[in-house]
Image (cartoon, rainbow, N blue to C red; front, side, top):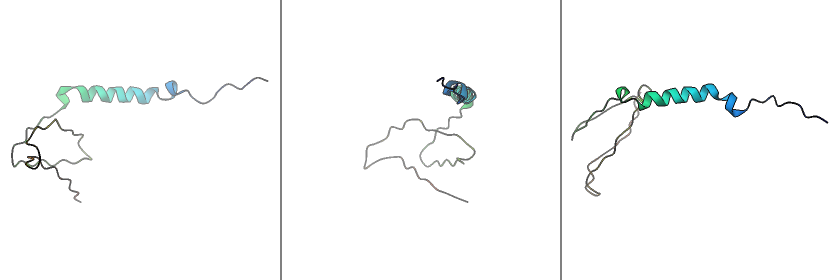
Length: 78
């Protein structure tokens, strides 16, 4: 008895467009011209809308606890 040919797409062909889109997105993210760097000073406050901005943070070196110099807070506002 012969088996029927497989009709389910193989992952390589099924996800080609998605992989290409993710590769393009990765290229955009790696482009330094697409990033805005903001140096915050003591007392500065930065508010961002997570629905509008993709953001990240660089490393922070400060005094060890209990004298930590950084406070991160999450607030939800409607």
